[in-house]
Amino acid sequence: MKEETKVCSVCNKPKALDHYCSAGIKKGKQYFRKQCRDCFGNKKRLRRVHNAKWMAEYKTSLKCEKCGYSTETNSDFTPRALQFHHHNNDKDFHVADGVHRGMSIERLKKEMAKCKVLCSRCHVEAHND
Image (cartoon, rainbow, N blue to C red; front, side, top):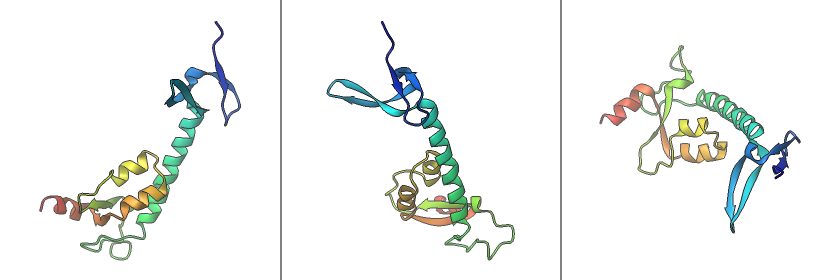
């Protein structure tokens, strides 16, 4: 029996179907992604790196809403100290998790709009109130 192959839409190499992630089953038929696992993984990795750089750059323009920690107030400022605090019970996901999972920047912005920006110290205090 001949093994079924498929051509990857990115690297244009024919590969066996076990090199592709499932895209689901519809009406009893198995569908696969257009990109092989390797190409899809590389794309996802690059997106996570891009999102992390974007987030670090974006955070440099922010400040803690409670104490004012920012580039203007602290010479040792680091954007990693700023965190997004969900003050309502409308959280879909942690913003940091969304960055590392490779979610779109638009989706991250939508989730960040629900949050207060706090430095790590004020964030811990907010959770202990």
